[in-house]
Image (cartoon, rainbow, N blue to C red):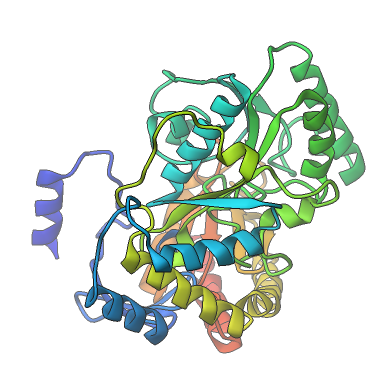
Length: 427
């Protein structure tokens, strides 16, 4: 492995991060488990950054990919594409957006780029409202609306971005307020902000912030925002790259926890729908999606192979009620992790929904983030046979837990036990 690592360093950018002091090469997987090149088996609680949503080597998906690859691999959006149309029809129906149109991309970053293009063209404004502590991708425009300095390598931007309160419930100036007062304070902040600006194009927001450490506002915040946005004609883009497809258990989309004033104007998706295949996209009401007055295509968005994978994966997901499994098993897991956390002075909070759970670590006796502890727990968990992620706002001090949605109760207990030992070992 050291030889491959040295080769990686010789040809890759220095900023291309790898997990672990001694990086691992994953060679194969099955179900919720993966194996490295040394033959070690790991329970996967991160799923390629929430991307292997259903299971590793899911037969229905691998069969669909193989069969489609044997027919035709690529054609581009310049030709009719049956798998793309069929998947678009299903996603349009599931989105909850009336008269929905779907455009496929290859990633969540590209999906958010497309949503920004649509919003700025539709509103004839380059002003974007974004949430503090947010993350929306690594492209030039997506970085410019990312409210997390660890993922913002430049301040140059094609957009004017203004940041809104509300993405983090338990930190910041409104943290001590009740949920109702928190929402009122964030709405007042938004009203004040819009009173000082020119017309904004859109608010883009993750219902649960992913890279930011699985933080979220109280239910109903974005519905309250929507009333203000509508008065100003500002669009609402819900970034569902990590919250979509039932991962939160309670809802199929994250925006549905804020549904009082209807669906968003646009939602973006990616990650889990392809179960590891490269699929992203935008759903928008027709008036917004059709606003472009120039040609636009996608060379690789809507590839017949990735669309076949998406169709097979979505079918399996719905037929096996994986949203319900995320709710049931995720509920058990989060309670088990809260019990584990109660024994550790380093855990500030266990939060999340369904199979999207964050454990925030601090220096014992303080409220100060502890990224070194998070890194230590990551290493200890790996040594115990468990792969997890990490993230967070001002400092990377949140353990991110997002297993495939087919996780069993026994596997949830196994992972929680390994995490308990990792917290003890790292402490």
